[in-house]
Length: 459
Image (tube, rainbow, N blue to C red; front, side, top):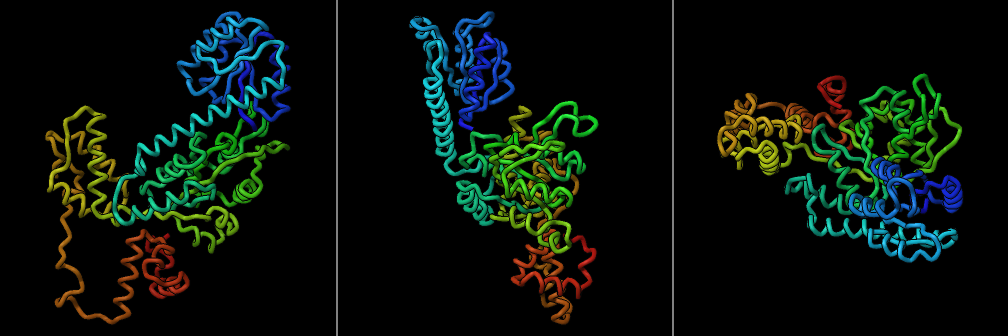
């Protein structure tokens, strides 16, 4: 499509004629017969340009230009005015109109004006995006941390954002996978388009199919009207498929076809719609293992796993724990209008010693509670949840590899180390193999030997 146009005219014949001509020139067009209707339409949908008549009952074209300039300054308005009515055209420009066309409308002249208006809007959006990039100076907004593990993530994001390649974000629950997806979107050429997120684990299969692909009227019992799916709503933007590992096997072929053909067929429909969507998928599960277990299609896996970003667990990010905790303290202090400045040294020790099985999400909840409860300018140990209050900094001298530790066979040392690594990575065999520097088949043989393939909390 060349752009999305809203036509405003109380003459139904003019609306019908312009709508037909513009659709033939690959514009997406809607129309309304009043200024009030135009404002309601702009409040509910995104348009690249508005074309309006000046003389209408109720809210006239001049006042409509003024309202749009105030509330939607990035949407250009092209006004239609009678031949020779220069005063009206000047008044419209002063009210905020971008351009004017005289009646009777010459379609070619209108097309030129629309192309210029759409290009103007997109240029404005790009300038704003670049200004934001300069202002943020490389910071990834809600992604906080300077550990080596996060620096590696930032470098990947810088390289990935400029492409349209599919990205698979992996990591334990609570590590911030959706924030990474948003960061990719905000730094891409699609930043002015929609960012749409869906959890594949949150809906039953039939509802998930309708949510993703849309449905035609009468496709099922409650389908009283046709509805666009998220692929269509995310057009020219980014679609995050969260918990992709929980995508029902029956829907995977249909998803694969959309990724290959870039066409969506709603449930119960015989027609397809072209979509231009970048896919970012996320999961805490080990997709390679799911492929081997035949619960996830191998061809879909390769379509999604063009570029992988592995998010580290919070326990592997060192003092990022304190940086994140401080940012949460400042956020919740401002939100609750409390004079809390930071974290006491004793409380910081507890935060560093904790394992954080819930990762950043758990830390955020912990600091929200602490800020709400504290009576001091700094969060104290007593403000932390009971589990953290009992946590003590690890004793470096308590390691098993000491003179007093019992002597065990080399095979037992290996077994304990493999178990320790599996626990540290939350049971993710792909990540465990990377840490141990062995291939997945070798790791599988070891796990089978130790009786850990079935059970042990692994994924």
